[in-house]
Amino acid sequence: MVRVIDVRRSGDRYRGSEPPSGISSLHAFSFGRHYDPDNLRFGPLLACNEERLAPGAGFDEHPHSHTEIVTWVTEGELTHQDSTGHTTVVRPGDVQHLSAASGVRHVERNDGPAPLAFLQMWLAPLTWDGTPAYSLIRREDLPQDHPDTVVLTLPAAAATLHHLQLTPGRPQPLPEAPLRYVHVLNGEVRFGPAPAEAPSGAPEAEVRHGAPAAELGPGDSARIGASAEGPLTLMAHGETPAELLVWAMEG
Image (cartoon, rainbow, N blue to C red):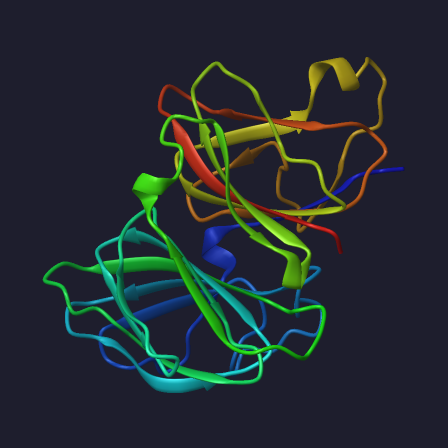
């Protein structure tokens, strides 16, 4: 079986149309007015949005339902309020999870003095029942010096979020799963078959969109399907560390 690696570059993301003042949005999948029938979702992953909010900017109260919403802040502070009674400030490295279930409303703002940047990911649940729920995992409660940290497990969507920290010269295996979605937060990443699993003459990975599957930069992503070729290995490319998020999904 040939592994399918679908690389998407940061510059190819859909730009949010007519955003409110002080907000810049980039979408990895069809979102809002941007509709591409060939780019609706990847497994349960429905959205992967890069959001930048100037001080004082934000999204006014709006509804969600039947969606698992996961937020990772990379810069600044995100103020969150929702109809279940939670008001929190999410900081870099924190993991916020809002299970919209039958319906919830929330507000997202940058009430701080510095620019805010965060990655927000939406996943489809396996069932349509349940009640809204909220959780926030602080960065200090996660392992700080571990190359692969499971930051969130979502049984509702059969998905697990990994935070990978790559050190130059030290290969790191990509978590195994039928479907994997890789998003580079910072640094340069090179990946490919693990050396022991890629003997001379082994078939090369099929790459879509004409982009080399071996290297990813900040904001780039890769969608990796099922394979019988063995594990993939990642490594920081160059002399600086790299940081990425990986969704491991059942399909």
